[in-house]
Length: 161
Image 1 (cartoon, rainbow, N blue to C red):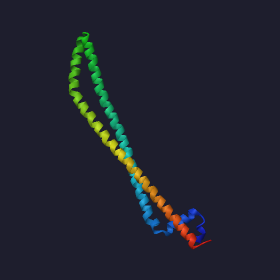
Image 2: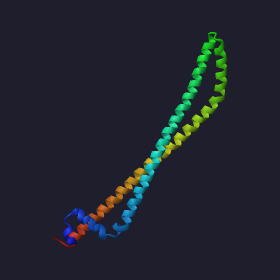
Image 3: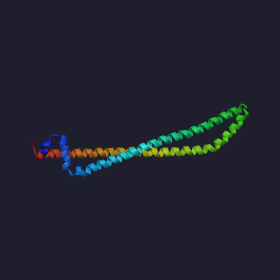
Image 4: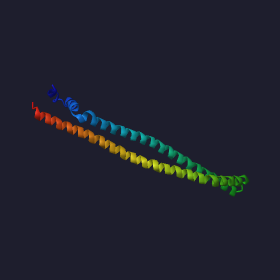
């Protein structure tokens, strides 16, 4: 009965999987482990991508806040230069605010930039790891197919016709 199944490649493959001890435990476990590891890396990469996006948005907010303060200061100084009395006081207040806030904003920006660089580096590592895991999956699948072809050829030689 098993020899009749050899004519159909899909049925022969199932028969091969039943008879080869590696196919019962080793290969499926290896393949499952590789796939789980790849999925875990992909989930980590997705979460990291979202963090990178949030970090970029935070960096942009810091840059915008600093640019807004500088723009308001420039406007107040320009108004004070043409004689607006309240503009001089506003320019002085903005200058004080900027002198307090600028170092803090610059430090915050630098922290966000460093976080971005670290996350981006990890994302590159994950891409490489995912690629290696995909390659290992394909290599294992190719090995199983090769072993199946070898087994099928040996069966055909042993039981011709």
